[in-house]
Length: 248
Ligand SMILES: C[S@@+](CC[C@H](N)C(=O)[O-])C[C@H]1O[C@@H](n2cnc3c(N)ncnc32)[C@H](O)[C@@H]1O
Image 1 (cartoon, helix red, strand yellow):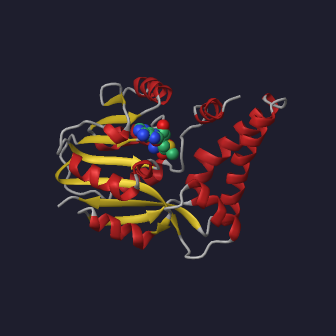
Image 2 (image 1 turned 30 degrees about the vertical axis):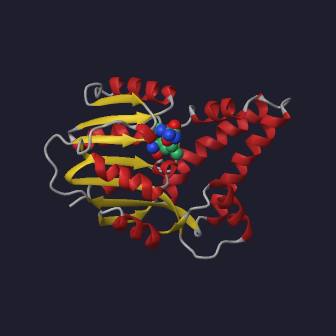
């Protein structure tokens, strides 16, 4: 079993591919002011699009959902059609590192749990160019809530995302990128568990049985269980912050 095959077998089965929930998507959206009646929204790293569907529902606009993994986009297309939103959601398979849109194309750029792939500051700058003047960017980013981590948390983040930093340091990056911060809040623990880690744990345990003869698969599956366990024990130390910002 190859690592990426197992990764996609797990992630394609989940309701979403990172922490977040519709209540948090709505709370972030409500911080945006002065929108046109049918805003044009770009959702970067949409996964199978739980937040894309919610954005299309609440914004009255159109959402272009971008990801580089086609099976996520196929599922989003099916879900959008069956929710009667086939016309307001379009998908595009493309790397966020080469999006190719004209500057000033969107009223809102959205990205839950994905912008770090470009480097947070670089991602912010790129998104700013894509926005019309007066446009809005909303993103979630992994953050540390405390300056000092216990050793096992430090090891986990050193391997996962060594650039993880504090809310204040991210707000500085937001200003450096030319945005005015409009609000921010941490994702609640329930947004990590119900739509993400709880279904992940069920699937990982099923895969442990399915691949019981495969030592490599067992080792990989163990790392996901360890990740869930770290979050359960140390959610006071780190989390995801939703940042909402304005391009003046
Ligand atoms: C942590 S998941 C978040 C998905 C979704 N926004 C959510 O919150 O459930 C990150 C997403 O970014 C996508 N991704 C990773 N690297 C990418 C790239 N270079 N270009 C486009 N999408 C990418 C992955 O396929 C995945 O769907």
